[in-house]
Length: 243
Image 1: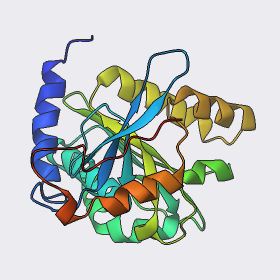
Image 2: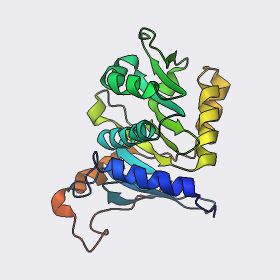
Image 3: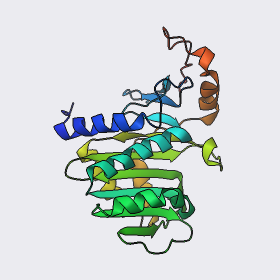
Image 4: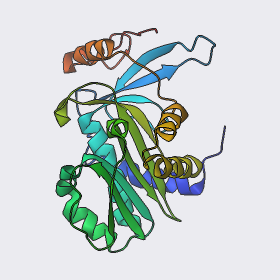
């Protein structure tokens, strides 16, 4: 096990403070489900506990609100730390508009802010780079990455259902403050966004995101209602699903 650095601990502390604004621990309905993958040869995958705030460095099935909350917390980190590079991907450049004021403010004190997306590229803005994605498959991914000398954080996830409306989308992914992982994902993402098919395939293979069936996930999330959340047991919360 790799020891957690002081930088990671400090970043985690700031992140945990920031995310409470977006994902209240007292929220009664879980918004994420842990995913466990066996190390055995058959690679059995099970859905684990339903949680409100997901754990760092673990795979989760995430709803749209949770993805938004984690993304906002990382963006808040970049605003607080100042300096460094911030990378944000959107499905479409239209989605940038709701973050425009915030990201323009952050860009004044950042080394670089890069926005990756599809659609019509916005007009040039000082200190913000707008970069069109060149491969349709990348539209399924959502990435928020911040890297500076003082803090590093990344959220990377992939949409696993076919929902068009943002609030109905489900994602599989994780977030981390590990400096080696952040740098690796940053390097790979910058490389893969050129759109070359072989590189996109390598990107898919490099992320250990297991394949899950949305039918079972929807059944699990439907059962995780407020009345189905006794304090004493996760057995009554979750049906394990084997693949």
